[in-house]
Length: 431
Ligand code: ATP
Ligand code: MG
Image 1: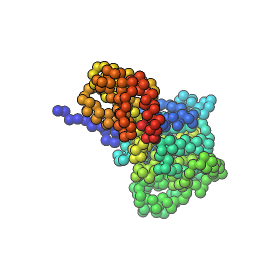
Image 2: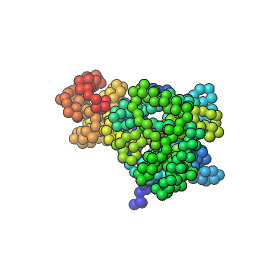
Image 3: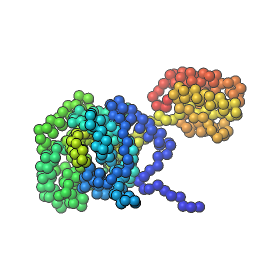
Image 4: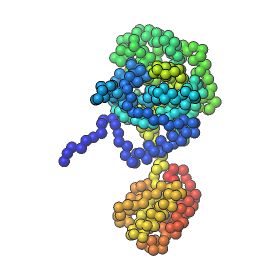
């Protein structure tokens, strides 16, 4: 037998049992975004390498170590699998003059690629929902995006496990003066710096604040804070953002060390974090990037956006055992040709009423079919044997406790199920 090949390390298959939860999460998310006027947009997974280098910044973990970059075999062009979505979206917006007559709210979903050390909540191919408000100076849209995410956590019933942290990293001039203060601070403690930080001391000292190395924490905690050096306009922006969040009743903490891992951000940065995923605690993060359009050759266009890691959200949902939405309501067990025909008709009638129904396929004894019904997670088994087929009826057997088995004429199955559901209305999301 030939040796079986395996998936690339850090790149996962999502099998149907788990994919059901992905669909539930994706459907819920898309619906929330729609209600805020965000529209879908799709861009390629492969982009020219210089796009990411220019957007994300040369001295960042992503560009220095994590990109999947390769030469196009035909012409030698350097190409990269996208490590994040904003750069490609801004490229597309410039290329198609998307914001020429009005600003745009857009979202994208899909795979991103980063060569990181795989662990729980961190993979080499992972998936994001990415949201961008292009052409808005804020802070209203900054707040809108946080409010929108908070709504999503509520609708997923995860609000108690996720909290919001915000910061302002000011404008370029403010960052320049802060940078000088940072170099001063870290130079004084040069012995305590790890390798990465030493290298970044003179190239990109802000990145030192983003270090994940616990040994660096005391030093970064004591570092000068950008938030103390904001100019008039940045300060006003940050204060307005906070009043908007308060108006919406959204709780937040200011984390002066929150800087984000990509260079294009300015002013507002934010993260939604959880304590339930160990070190991979950020489920969504973003901020404002008012200079990125110009940096990529476009006209000045203020903008704000965020990325949300889908795998981390799935882990949270699994942890909370939520989202059984794609479990069928009923599983139809049948034996014989007449029964099979009745089974198909009953199932179609229930599907007309919006319910998920699985009809047993591939035969099997009554016992083995009932086993499959149980394993499907369905709430009801609909049983059609010889007697039922002859009488044109369906036996409805609750599989999750509750009522006795009852029999109804096949034509009334949808009505009976509706009746049963109103009688046993509980919120286990199985309908
Ligand atoms: P982290 O600090 O965890 O490395 P990041 O700051 O690099 O995250 P962003 O570039 O802001 O992350 O991406 C937005 C979101 O995408 C993250 O908050 C996280 O939920 C998710 N994400 C980022 N990298 C990975 C990864 N390697 N595997 C799974 N999800 C990821
Ligand atoms: Mg990272």
